[in-house]
Image (cartoon, one colour):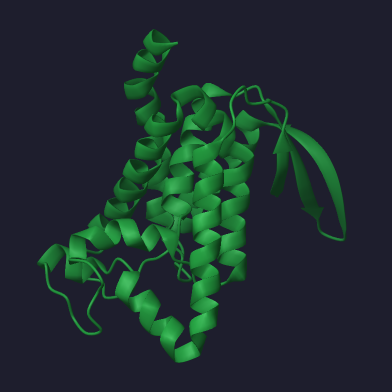
Length: 222
């Protein structure tokens, strides 16, 4: 299932959501411009590598920042066009309403914090792994978790693939995101296939918890 749009209009312009999408897109274009050897080196220098973070070592090629800070840099680097496009599509569909509810600055902090928590969730499962971790999916999962709790009745216009044909359906957000989360849980028990499933699970749960922590202050502010 691929989300196209939801039916909840935003009352404010989603500056942060759009800025994050633009930044991720520009970084990916930069990766492509570097070519194969240079792009691969750039990814290794910005990726979050569990072993380096848990042991506070920086194995060659050296990172641009100390190992713990790669938890942030890795959020803006992707491994391919479908990787970045998929993450940014989900952020575009669901991010504007969460930003509208939280406020711009709070949403930015929320996005970065859930992204870090998502990465730590993955690292906890294999702290000695030397496999680089990149992508915005953990932070985007945090946004999905917040949306799941705040806008469960929203209708999501969705592209649905049914074996031999494709159709467009309107699916309640609680069903769409609930199915997405269930898929992450089921997939986490299988071969990873290079996907940090536990980061998705940790990010989604962090997003739900974040709503309970943030919403009382946003209500007071509004």
